[in-house]
Each structure stands twice: as C-alpha cells, then as structure tokens.
Length: 256
Image 1 (tube, rainbow, N blue to C red):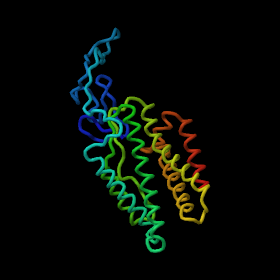
Image 2: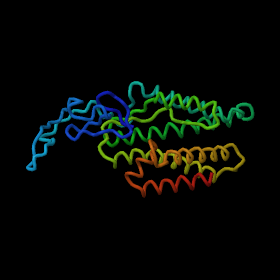
Image 3: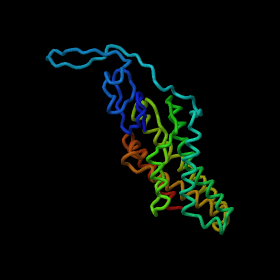
Image 4: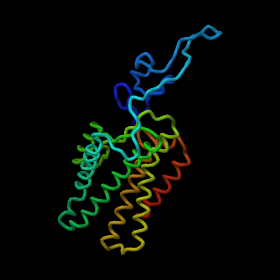
C-alpha cells in the first residue's frame, strides 16, 4: 500500500503525478488539487485540442526516504501490536498445548512471531534499500477483522502492512512485494534442513515441521495473485518470478 503524499490516505493503486512525481489518492490526483510543485502549463497542439505539457521538473518529497534499518517513531509500537494480535490468533488455535507441552508451545510462539516479523521487515528493508520511505503501520480495519476472527473458525491475519512512499515503478513494487514471500521460503528451507538432522518425534523435529508449515502457508497465502496480496504485484511485474516462488512454496508445503 502507498500513502497519499497530501492527505495520507492509503491507496493500493495510487495516482502518480506526471509533473512532480508524487503519489496521490483519487481526490488529490490532479495537479491543481495538490498544489503541484512541478512546473506545468496549458498548451495547444496543431490540431486545436488542448492539454498539459511539462516544461520543467522540480520535486521535493513530503516524506524523506529513511536509511536502511531505521524505524519510524511509532513503528516498533505498531509491529509489537501486530505481533501480539497474531500470537493471540495462534494461541486461540493451540491453547491446549499450554497444558500438555508448555515448552513446545513457547517454541511454536517463537516460530510464528519470527515468520510474521521477518516477512514485514523484508518488505521494509528492501524498500529502504531501493531508496524509499517505508514503515509498518497498523490498519484499523484489518486489525478489527483479525481480532474478530479469534471467535471464528476461519482465521484472518491482517493487522497491518508496510507503507511505502513515492514508489517509482512496477519493477520496484514487484521486488519489494517478492521479498516477503521469499523470506518465508528461505525460513522454510532452513527448517527443512533442521528436520534432516533431528528425529521427527523429537522436540526440534516437531518444531522444524511447524516452521515449514507456517512459513510455506504464509508464503502461499501472500502469493495469491489478486487484490492487495503480494502475488498481485509480483505477477504484474514478472509472472515467471511469481510462478517460481509459488512452486517453491508449494513444494515446502507438501513436504511439511
């Protein structure tokens, strides 16, 4: 998701001003609606139709790109809230482990938390490495839906997302989106390697299987090629990258 550079409204498909290069919501997409800092003037063509022609370029971003690894003022708080809600979802499904095997339950909590945090940080850091402002923010509607799923057999995990400012191309959009599922696939491969050196019924063997299942499921879920999912952005950028990632995540899921 991208925030409007004027009002901050979150948009999945923002409008990019051809004059100043900023991104805006549908309400502020016209140059005169956002006090465009770029230079533009009305001109006429030889056929008599009128239009806008850019005569210069001047742009000062309203949100500065943050250095790689840095966090916003409230970002760690939002990450903590998101992590806490996701762990509540997990606990609602596996609460019996508290009484039967509390030590294993602690391991499962750690694996769940790592899968979520590293997925979101992969989006953030990859965007920062490309020079963009990027920050994880809680989405109130998604947070409420996630909390309501605590009492539902169908679990929804959407407490927030990484917001990216002034993203320049679908290539960058796709690469940032790809980083999340790829991170989960790499984690799944590491857990698979761990399973090769542990007995299936041992503590570490069981935890390795949980790690493969969680990370492959999270990767496949985010690779759905519709709507706001990472898969929709990846497939628009590079369908082969999307296909290869789906195959890798699918193999991990079957192995788990």
